Image (tube, rainbow, N blue to C red; front, side, top):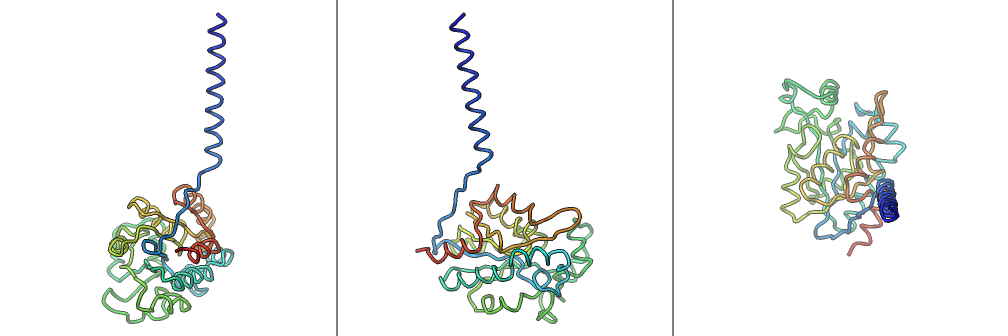
Length: 250
C-alpha cells in the first residue's frame, strides 16, 4: 500500500513538472536566429510603392498612422543602404494590376478594395505609360537603390504571396536561401511572402519596423502580423539590429 502511494505521488510530481516545463516553453518561444552568409543572403522588400508609402497614395488613409509610427519609410531605406554598402543582393517583389486583372470574377475583401480604389494600377503589362510617379511606382527616394542595374525586380505578385511570380526562381538561381524581409504591408504581402519562403525551405528574418499595415475598425493588421512573424519566422529583428547584423557579416 505504501509502495502504491509513493508511486502515485511520484507520478503526480512528474506530471506537474512536465506541465510546468510545457507552460514555460509556451510562454517563452525560442529564437532560432539567422546567421548572415553574404553568399547566400538577400534583402527582400515587398511593395515599396507610392500607394502604400506616400501620403498621396490611395492606401495612406488606413496605413499612414502605422507607417509613421514605425518610421517605415526611413527604415526600409536603411535596409537598402546597408545591403548596397555590403554588396548584399537586393530583391523587390512588386504588386501591379493591369486592366485585364479587373476582369476577375471573384475577390477577397482586400482584393476587392484594392481594385475599387485603383491601387497599383498600370496601363498594361507591356507598357510603362503613366507609370512614372503613379501609385504603382516605387517611392522616389528608393529609386537610386532599385534602378542601379543590380537590384532584382521580380514579376508582380497578384494577390499577396510570391506563389504567382518568379521571386523564388530568381532567389534560387542566385544560390540564395536566407532572406531579410521588410516592406508592405505587414499582415498581407509581407506576411504571405514570409510564409511561402519558409514553406519553400528558406530562412527568413523579418524586420519588424521596416513594415506597417492598415489599422481599421475591424483590426490592426500590424499587430496581427507581429504575432505571426514571431511564431513562424526564424527571427524578428528591428532595423537597427538588421543593419548591425548586415554590417558585421563576414
